[in-house]
Image 1 (cartoon, rainbow, N blue to C red):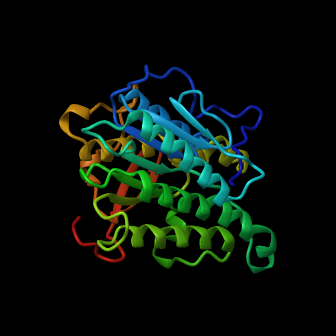
Image 2: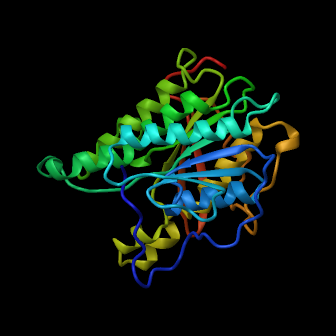
Length: 299
């Protein structure tokens, strides 16, 4: 369905499965699609350390997650999404109460990869980019339509796009990647509209410029660039801050353990249909809220 992350020999570990807080059976639930990659690992730890129940959906299990939905590499996205739906139905039966009908408060889409190349490379680059970037986002959207909390207003779907493909920016040197991300942006905008079947939930999109991950470092030997790449924990901190805003006070928890974000999240307020561009310079991260492409009616 999407490629498993690879950690090159000698790469510094930028996100980890290591020490997380205890499970919280009564906390809200977060599903992380692509929860075992560098970005997904940071999301799992951020939410778990803040007292959330975490579900990882990926090709490999994340031991830091409370529940793992392990996908089959030899199955297409429809089969894997159907299997994930069945697993989440089991969680519904186990955890639905009189006061909480929906088991998932937040769904974060973190699966992704990159391939370069222009029109001459489309035969080899297009299908992998659609499978890994776009279809994983479609899986997250489908599962959100089935399981996200839309009745209380606490539900949130966060998709991961790309700053390089925002606002229909041309991507001639990475056509397959750019098309997959532009389509993800269109998906997010459509889902944020008042007449979508996610009405009642909040939909927003994270737009990385460059994420500081082992796989990205493996493609660049210029170590001076790394201080201008955004650590995964920054995305996780913002996602958690947004999720907290939608939860009742009794469910509010702090930022990831041991991390104080270098940006002030008050400058990036949660907005229906919002796109959030991350830029890091010399180790300091800023977030710019781009206005929605289409103004969504308040939900």
